[in-house]
Length: 506
Image (cartoon, rainbow, N blue to C red; front, side, top):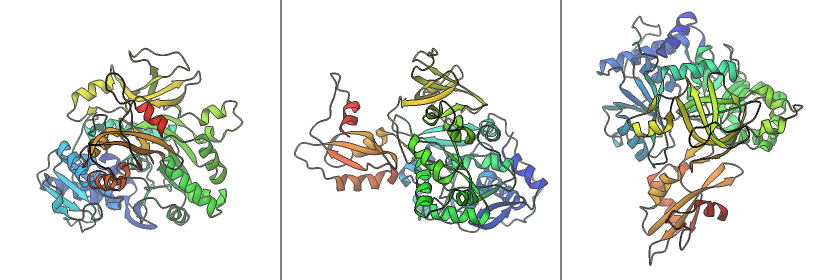
């Protein structure tokens, strides 16, 4: 069940098929990709790596991301993808918790390789690889792995203020990959997926179904998102598919409108844009459909069931004649074929249709559990069901509409931010006595972080100083966009901060 068999299969059948692109330039066929990943596997084994050891990937989107990732799987290792936006201190904590033996980085993310400690070694993927390999696939066998062995140790923020390592298995990834064809989109060998969103997250996970189909994998030269670059790249290599947070969708639509790109020209640049990871306003998707045409598919999932939960298809999004079209646009769609969806009360009892409760997911996409955290695992997975922490309601058609989150998580630009993480940092800032962080609605980002800070007696707090402190200790995207200095925080009789009151203020 090792995911590397997927690469070996297509490489032996179609070794000359174009596979990996850096911008418009093909840098690897499927045969070359497999040969390079096999060479990485040999190198890992020469360093003494054993099956199940962890390898961290902390880099911007890069063509070698795919080669190293599959090389690690080829050797039976576990990939630890880390968001390149994180602060080095946050990355270090993940590496330590995962007990990773090696880290792969790009120089823009980690300029000083010696700054990362606790690992056997650090490799800059922008430098020549530490091996010489032919461009032909060797006969070296792939290390067998069981279906329920961990393949992808994904760290997602938790309510405790520390990230949790989500153990995603080879079975989980295969389930997601095969489900893509039925619930999300078709993929032809000539199709191309563009990695504009971080490959450490959902965008990278979608490499699996596109590999299954023998499609092309395109990493923009910028290594990230640039609307003009993506439109041009789509014209050069053919219509692109990509995963995008609503923020990215909005920027693509803004560019198309400003540049007066017609729907036909949009169709020449983009085949499918799968969006998720944050709320999409109905008015925004209607505008996107009007300007860019039927390019869109919505999915709902989370790190614990990667990219698998519900889906709203291209046909459903453009069927404006449907009598419940407005309700569909406001929803996250219908359960994907590989899972069941329930909405229950706190005791796990199913609620009547239309009533709001917690969303539960069951299926082969659901994680094995949290790494080295049995308490969190037991809380999240009960009787085989994943308790998502999202609140929603089902209707008679099976349509799921999210209403709220049971946790205080803030989703800004598609990235998850937990208030506790920001609060713990700000509480260490000079002059700060108390802190409470909430999310505020924002037209561009979905939500932005707002911090309410109470100064220590006799101290004066300046937003500029607080912001500078955050930049030193947490990722830039997590820092508050607004700081409010207040005399006191609203609390109930038990001393608990009333964040509902703070949300009213923002």
